[in-house]
Length: 131
Image 1 (cartoon, rainbow, N blue to C red):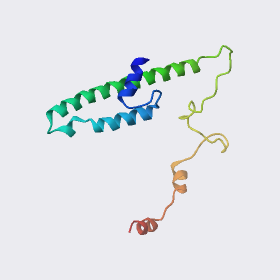
Image 2 (image 1 turned 30 degrees about the vertical axis):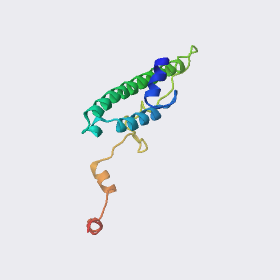
Image 3 (image 1 turned 90 degrees about the horizontal axis):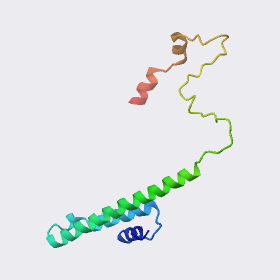
Image 4 (image 1 turned 180 degrees about the horizontal axis):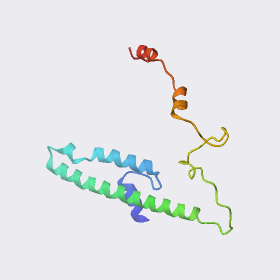
């Protein structure tokens, strides 16, 4: 864990910072230490390049540590229960099944003519709206 604290220090953050804080700290420091800001000063540009490499490594390591901790937490929380239970009916399962109304006495016998009669619009109203 000592190594992780060092990465927090590189990003100027307190240990235990949230992922958003880690990312924002990384963005702030990459803006400050970007080598292109020191284009006229080769020594400072090299120093900025080295600092940017440290920032990249610290950000990547902290992200991977946070991901590993979150994965471990999810695994411990989502362990299956030993007691048998009925499977829950998911609303996603029936998402793409057509919903057919059976109130016409037998089946859905709509025709194209029926559906056209329901759609009506006045061309003049649309033309006036478009002008």
